[in-house]
Length: 233
Image (cartoon, helix red, strand yellow):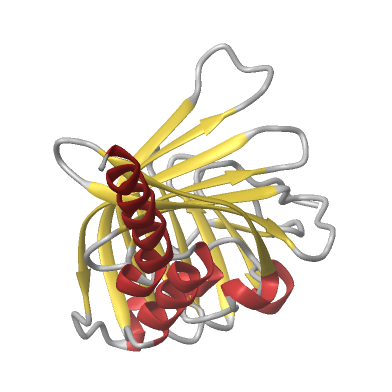
């Protein structure tokens, strides 16, 4: 009787292991595809954000916060409260404005924010499955939230980007945190809060008018992650 019970128990365990993927169908690749699909079917996004730039040789991380907006065809707008700055793209031109310096850095979007930019898919550009390979996949559970965590690396060698970690809300499949690692081990961590979708922003919302008297400079390539400074050539 004990032998029969033991065999039955093992059979149930094996059956459970075999059936789990069929019942839930959750794999890293399926989550990656669902995230891509969700953003492709979203016209625009609004969120508050908290950001940290954690440098290898820095004693303290640089922090930023504000509101961010994305719209298909490469449009985005980062309105920082801390520090006081803006990064705006209308899909053709990118403006980086520093009010306290009265400077505006300007660039052609195609030269700065390419398809394979880590967060390009948020603005309707790029393809996660095409551009990145899945390194690791796990689940993160806390008292307040349940998330999937995807660790990705670019399929083609990239001097600026070595790894991208996306924390994805299990219920909505929207990204709630993105960690961008560069080749030196520095990390730009962006946390998205109070995400709203399909608000209906007009294209004009993603246009920047250069203030009278502001110094206009050409932006270097490639663009730094939002939150880091840029320099003129």
